[in-house]
Image (cartoon, rainbow, N blue to C red; front, side):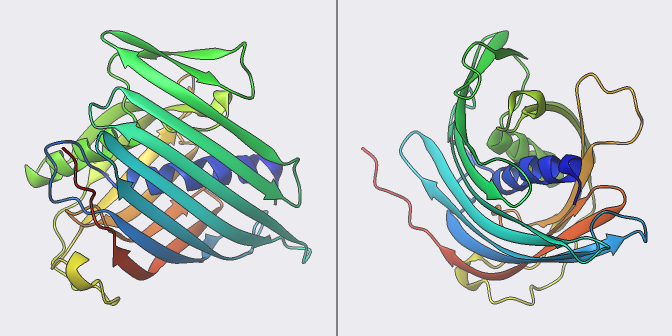
Length: 269
């Protein structure tokens, strides 16, 4: 596995689980839950640096009285054409305010090909502008425009558009990652409603279908037509993701939902 691919996957693994679980104060239908996914290789070119993938991810979304907390733990192994297997073990936590103007995150990651990572960050938007700061680089910060989305607010906007039958959303999104990768430009395409039952028992979290959604991620300064990567996922109106696929161009990773359970909301005064 190349270093570039490993860096991109680390960023995306954090981002995908955050954007998969939308809510704001008015989105009562979105449910807190714990979801467990199995990962495997999707498409892979013959000359791709990754030829096999295996792994698992456990994600939790829990309501607090002012916003939402999420946590993801995953272990994933990548096999290259020469038979070498690399491994990533990661823990990602985040919190986003209901108001959509504050976001914090912490990342701890170990891998067989890079130094260990353990850092966090905080971002806030105040009116027409904002700023993000990082514990790993306290002297550096990122300026944010007032229309920057944090992941939960971004997905909330996607669900609102899907409910209205709209198909396109372009937005700048702060995902939570290293400074060079934390702020991305996105183009989202929302497909028509697919009335298909899940093959997994979703219990009280089940609905009768999903929207297929595709998000392309670009660096803000990018001039190339091709995105850094894309995510395609099957999104239910309550925020449950049945399946997602991460496409890097020469290979992709598919994550399929294996099990899920509801998380009760707290009683807030």
